Image 1: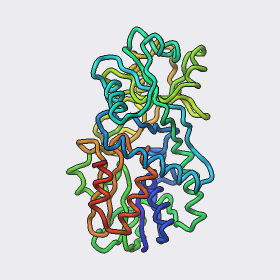
Image 2 (image 1 turned 135 degrees about the vertical axis):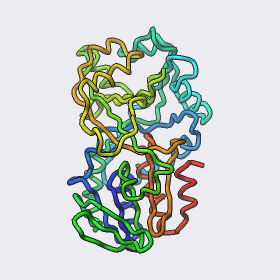
Image 3 (image 1 turned 90 degrees about the horizontal axis):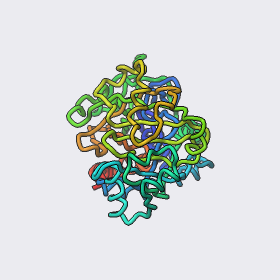
Image 4 (image 1 turned 90 degrees about the vertical axis):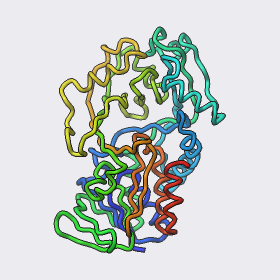
Length: 365
């Protein structure tokens, strides 16, 4: 089949990769002048992959397939863009998200080491022991490197004959005919179209507004105090810092920076709205992390990166068939880790027509 993929985030790249492996003729469109789009959710330095999934046991089970799909991609790329540094969780108060993640590991019988507050602070001296109940380390998981993954996937796709159209904005899609129109007036027709355009999906398919909301958030890159640099460089990723901020941390591994982000920071916005950081926004994000981190005021904000992404009400992934179009929104703030497996599943559904099965898998049901 002749297939268009609209949007070259990790879902689009992986779908193009999988469709090409299945023998289809693929054209990949990306509105940004270069892949990855620095304003999109797949364009940053590093992302977490983890077994810990709180109350979402379906996704906790699905992560096994995600690891397998990444391994398949590494074999194709000839390089692994992943550091298995482990995953730390922290609980500050009873029943907080840090505790929910640990309870999820228990239900899945996934191993972890449990540390009381004093031991956690001894192992990770950036933690203020007086502010936490406990911490735990899951050995399975670590940091994926999206920008590096995208660059190598672009190289691989070009080598294998996929047509990549960077700087090509798709302005309209006719789902019934399979025709797409670009902003510059060019048009083309396809047997199937996959729309994986992330935060921009509602511009092309406004009918998805009944289930998708677009948010703007930001992350901060920090320079820790000199005496804590070594501890951070040896640290695992942190899936949740406990408390009520929905905070996560990626350490400065393999040439990346120390990144912090918090779910409480997101606000409903259009994808191109407020894309420049606000004054003192980095300090606001940094300060979400005290507690549980000691001496937070000594961390210097190096830069702030904004991000736009879509959420469903229940934070599960979405697909919808509209004529010749398969729309995919595998995000809700936790989709990158599944990227390679999403592409495999979408490609299989485009080929087989089993859209109901794709949706069940995306929702981890």
